[in-house]
Amino acid sequence: MKKSTLASRVFAFLKTGDEGKLNRFELKVEKFFTKQIDQRKEAIKSLQEKIEDKQEELNDTILAVNLDKINSTEGAESYVVTYVRAVQAKEDEVEYLQDQIETIEKEIARLEKTQSTLYSVEEA
Image (cartoon, rainbow, N blue to C red; front, top):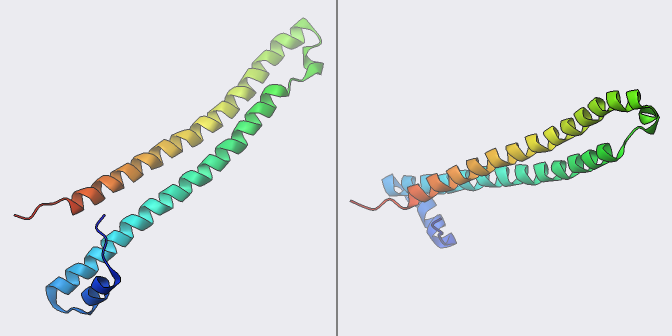
């Protein structure tokens, strides 16, 4: 990303005419990308915290074998389905959050690519 000094920004802000308008527009474009990318990075952090919580829940679910339900062969056979479904449901919750992170990472990559494209255009 192109960086500018405070003086050049103030000068650009004070300029009149098309060049000044373009400089102000460029600043708005930079702010747009920065804000969009930062918001997505914060969303990823939040999702990562949720994943940690969901992984704890998954571990708890794995360890929460109901011993009363497995006292008999018949009880154990029917409880297996309930137990596996509960574990799979927790796995699905973790996977869903991981998929959301992947989607956001793709959005960030797309924004960075567009930003790079904007600043890599060569003059004719």
